[in-house]
Image (cartoon, rainbow, N blue to C red; front, side, top):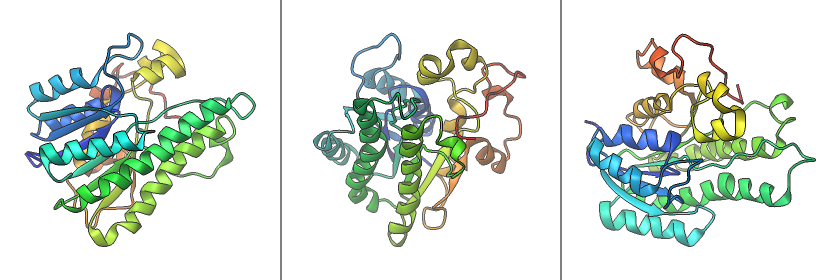
Length: 272
């Protein structure tokens, strides 16, 4: 039970990958801060911070659901204050909250451009900045950002330039934090799925039920995070991980049970 009584703050943890990570670490006894916007049920998306909190507690962890739009600096500050008041130091920050828009340059509206940059780039930056004082007090502090490995091949930029810029910015920040915070012993790594993951975003924005059938469950990302976050923060930093590579390194060779359709064809992720 390495994570027993460790405090984990996860942005966007009311559903999908963030929720899966929350439940995985809760099952190991962690304290989970669920920082997200969803306070009422949305039929298209599903999940609220309060519903996730109940599941966290049922799984064996302690929960702190906090409304937070990471575009709002004051709301982020309140999350940090409530985290410190309830749990003390912060051991792990997971930058999971993210917005997706696959429009090309001509189609992209200014307000949509601003939205994805405000959430993915500015929001991730401000959450990490304001979490830093709490992380410094941990014995093995980790920042894990859910963003893809960098590849300057223009095929990743041409179809959806703005979105690619935001996700690559997240990775650049994560790698920069690995250097900036190295002397403080705070690890900063990224994690990204090798295949599409069965989330509301994939169903509603990318490919519907057909793509869901060719995807893996969010639990593969949760299990990969589980292994990364146990590593020594003083030495294991600056990495860009893929979920299946992490699991194979940990000795998990059969990944079939993560597939929505075991034995079926899997869809490689958007950036791979």
